[in-house]
Image 1 (cartoon, rainbow, N blue to C red):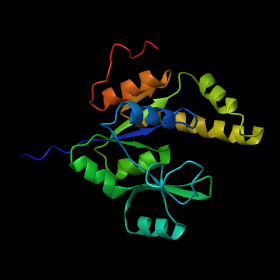
Image 2 (cartoon, rainbow, N blue to C red):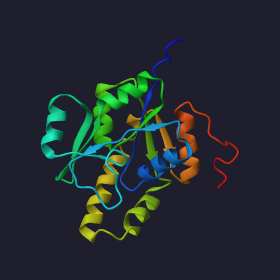
Image 3 (cartoon, one colour):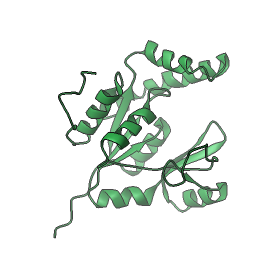
Length: 198
């Protein structure tokens, strides 16, 4: 039996509050043939989170050892506290087996992956408008005014990175954006007639 051709890694990134996690969850639910990478993190599990499903929860020492040994495709310190990174081996194993793989990471991580895997496909998830992104950020109501301004400033910088990406998917509707993303990945949406109608 012939070995399947290596699949191409797809990297999904975009500004804060654009809905990367929501689209990824929709991919996981509606397109189980797509393998979603599970990040390693030094932060503690939140209620309901399962090790190996939501994240690989590791100690700071273990994370540093993984980074030192080149076991991470990319990694970053988030909010100056916890470290997050993408284990390299599971990604390479899925790609070698011909399984479509999706990596949902931040802009900093996407740039690191481009440096180490330039053959990957890079997709930018964009908001329908700046006003809508601002509404989503402020609408969460979980940050004070200073934190909101910091996040909005970060979002402006992140939006300016759009030209670095191969494709842009506008997250105006989660199911439609998910269908467009899997189409960009070379997969056929489950019900193309529904795409964009909801």
